[in-house]
Length: 237
Image (cartoon, rainbow, N blue to C red; front, top):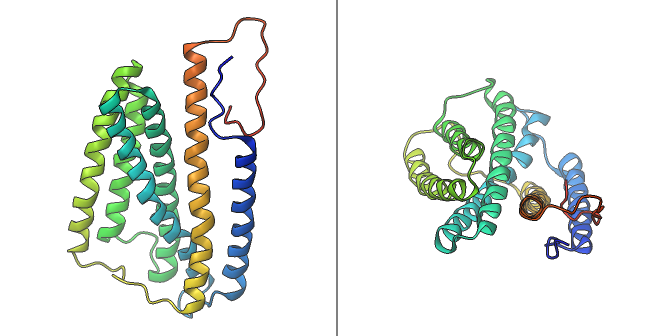
């Protein structure tokens, strides 16, 4: 029953999480041992090694949501809607982490918890746009109508991102336009970017698999008295 729900096999799940944990441990070692300290900001400056990779990973999740929205409008298949929802939720999660880490980084570097700079305003606006996408999914009850409305909104949200980003870059900002990093800092940043990227991909895939399982169960509920078994890391909840 419900064959095909195991979109990613347990072996691939295990390998993904082991690789993520291994690289994450290596990046933490580099972060605390090798990455140099900033004399003015102190240890808190190292938040940038989490803040920047998380912010960068919002780009692929937004793109996945955009492609999935196009896919649904083109093919009218709910599998695309499930993928868009998964990417949308991870986008909001990443944006939240970027905002929170940015607040602590702002306090460490500029001495204020929040600085009304264009980049921070853009990130906050981005969070609001994609948080409303998730709210829209809750407000609309019909699966087909919800998928259509969210796909249209997903396209509009994506097209708005580069316009706002270009506008922000044309305005003066307290944030540096470019980061000057030494070899050790670049290596540490690369080591941190890898596990954050793996974790982002894993979260999107896991949420997508959960969405597919829940939709299949809703469309074809199990027979009363029949116990369904779930494999480890199969995406059930």
